[in-house]
Image (cartoon, rainbow, N blue to C red; front, side, top):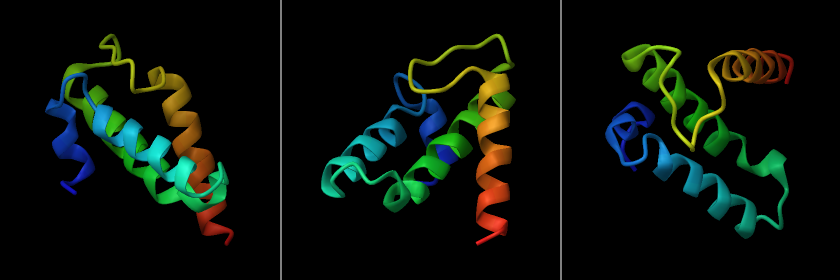
Length: 82
């Protein structure tokens, strides 16, 4: 699969990453802990999307910029404490 930043140009932006999360959840009986890599990839794509287009941009696949930053901070904290 391409890098998360490559999916910034997908239509809609980051949609392949959002689909990958759904596929992962389905395969893993909706165990979110097993899909952290897919979630992180979506967040990285969304961060690149907002970096490229600004915080006013929107994508149905991405959380709002402030929520994205909070989620990325939480994800980094949980992965560093593991």
